[in-house]
Image 1 (cartoon, helix red, strand yellow):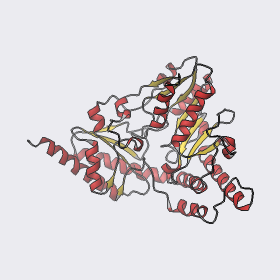
Image 2: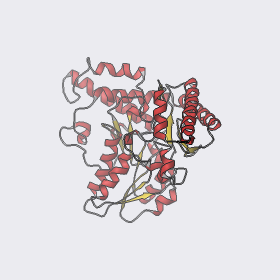
Image 3: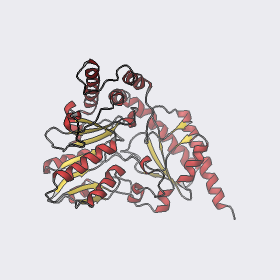
Image 4: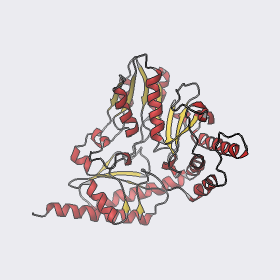
Amino acid sequence: MIYADNAATTRISEYVYEKMLPYFREEYGNASSRYTLGMSAKRAVEQARIQIAESIGAKPDELYFTSGGTEANTWMLRSIADTYRRESVHIITSAIEHPSVFNTCHALEGMNVDVTYVPVSDSGRVAVESVIKAIKPCTKLVSIMMANNETGTIQPVAEIGCLLQKRGILFHTDAVQAVGHIPVDVSDLYVDFLTASAHKFHGAKGVGILYKRSGVDLPPLLYGGGQERESRAGTENIASIVAAGYALEESVAMMDETAKCVSEMVNYTIIGIKSGISDVRINGVLDNRLPSIVNLGFDGVSGESLMHLLDLKGICVSTSSACNSGKDVPSHVLLAMGQTEQQARSAIRVSYGRINTSDEARIVVDEVCRACNKILSLSASPT
């Protein structure tokens, strides 16, 4: 199998796997227990918090562990609506956000929250001016993702954050695709909230991260015990939290080397497929993007059919966000970029990771070209 869908999830690294194993059997204590076994678990959680904080330029007490990026995004957005429920609330976001932000904002509209979805260019980039122009007197929050999960396009988060800070407006970035893959520092980004997910950087599934700047209030997500400083009750997922700390530490240490390798594979893929298929689009920008992702559109080809043909050859790619899999709808990201439904349905996303090799990229190119040409020849054949 060639796994080229690392934007959906990543394989836990061997190093991280070994680090988390003891917390399934030997170090299985509850971090809320006051005896030695429980205190050992508590120390492990706080060590992971320190590791993650150092990796993104935050303070440990500014981080909260959740069940994933979706929970972290939902917590932050719903809390803003709850905090200002006695006032008019306006939120600004973009038309290309991950479903956990996009759909939560739609739900908030049903709760009398005013939401503006700023458009993007045909390359999928948010204009700073569009965000600033959308500000109203009752704007409480702006949420713009750091890097798009389908195209890899990096957004001008730092520029937006700097301008919002001067206006006293809270700013959130969904950095799930960015953390562990490109440099991320919360101070440089001028963000009040940042969200991430461990399984995107070779950690375990089931752990999300919410950064909340010191001094910013956020109502509790879950009531119950006093976990996560009484903000997110529930027994901690110790093993996966431990994995998150070591995984991010490892990913940051390997970031430059990984970025160079995956960028070379992406460039090879683009050049190879362009030489083998006449009608191919690169969806998104060629610069200012994550080094590991390329989104390709093929005129006259169904992305779904192409994905399944590649699957038969043991190659894993996707047609859109994994959170939209199984839904017969075109990508809202590509539609927001001005593509037709047919164009949006013709796309696949290839996302490499440090587990991939140049030989695998060559096979991906060969099989994509072979499958596309097969589909095109069948559609051109007389019935």
